[in-house]
Amino acid sequence: MLKLPIYLDNHSTTQVDPRVLDEMLPYFTEYYGNASSKSHEFGWKADAAVEIAREKVAALINCDLSELVFTSGTTESVNLAIKGVAESNASKGRHIITTNVEHKVVIETCKELERKGFSITYLNADKFGMVEPSVVSEAITDDTILVSVIFASNEVGSVNNVTDIGRVCREKNVLFHVDGAQAVGKIPVDVARMNIDLMSFSAHKMYGPKGVGALFVRKKRPWFKLNPQMGGGGQECGLRSGTLNVPGIVGFGRASELLRLEMAEKTPKIKALKDKLSEGIVSNLDDVYLNGHPEKRLPGNLNLSFKYIDSAGFMAAMKDVALSSGSACSSDTTEPSHVLKAIGLPDNLIRSSIRFGIGNFNTEEEIDYIIKKVVQTVNSLREESPAYAVSKKKSAEKEIN
Ligand SMILES: *Cc1c(COP(=O)(O)O)cnc(C)c1O
Image (cartoon, rainbow, N blue to C red; front, side, top):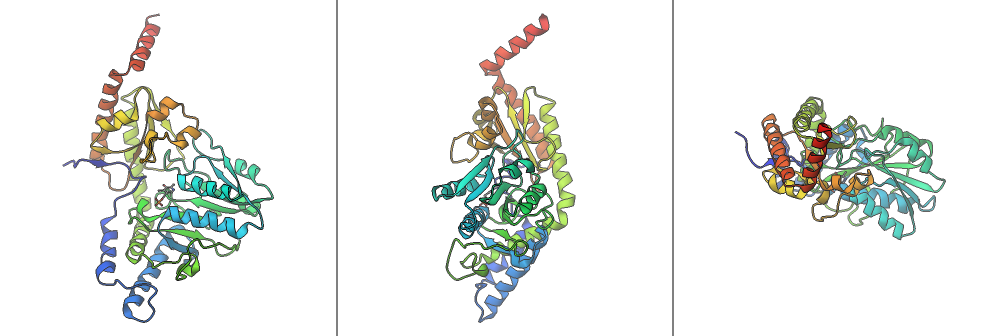
């Protein structure tokens, strides 16, 4: 039986895998010690669990245990990475390079540094929302200390060529930070092979709990200093003070382990559901446009613009399917998406853009239901659209002539 509403907003957050929850539960009620308590069994138990989780997260991205700092999530990790590098390297240079298709957290952090006297280059992404390594290379100056690039777009799903951007940074002796929130757990990520120096990511985007994440910080080659952004008890080698979120970290570890073991099996299934959804929509409707790169994209991301409709009306009519739209993508605001603007999408296609985010728990039955519902909804909204009526009339006249 199909259960409504259907969740198809897996770029915003994901369901906690029941196997993850099972592993977390004892750390709330039984092993509830503080991982920093060195004098008793409760503390030792919590500390051991954190270190096992650290091994599991490290194995997913191929780094050393000493290179992971647990945080409250990507937002905190990005702040620590960008401000931490800026502060500790300010005597070397004060120029930072990023792109105009980043998540708000990277843009806002860079703006804050701009007010403090750093100069920021916001590289223009191409029409797919990607940046070429050569474009990054040309922007690097003697004053550049850091490049920060989104790994996979949370809006249009395009996946950047991180390995080659990292190589360019390495050659020019510039640190390279990656916003990996959408990539880790969805596509293979190997920080060693991909020349990444810092990477931010969150557990809740990969079937783990909310409010926990990590910053990968390379320890060797290159060695660099990172200024902590929160002082206190000195946890996480002094890089992130504060009592560790033990149950959250245990869940993050289990989620990482499951994805490391199951990603190869899950990815083709998600991609098949995405392709089915895409074909089902495109073969039944005209004037539908794909946003983002046709191939180099996250397996579960489908971002479409439906000409002649308004996404607000669409979402209202699709109440039993949880989706996101480009016109109100940061959900609390009604600002049109800066990412869709940056890739040069005209206003009418921004206003009509919908993001479908497929995850591990979606089913074929749900996709069948959504295809039908989308086709019905778009057809009936277009019936009411004067612009659509005009375009229909024009194309009918063309056929007659
Ligand atoms: C979700 C997301 C963030 C923010 O993550 P939080 O867990 O909310 O801190 C940053 N960047 C990208 C690409 C994201 O998808």
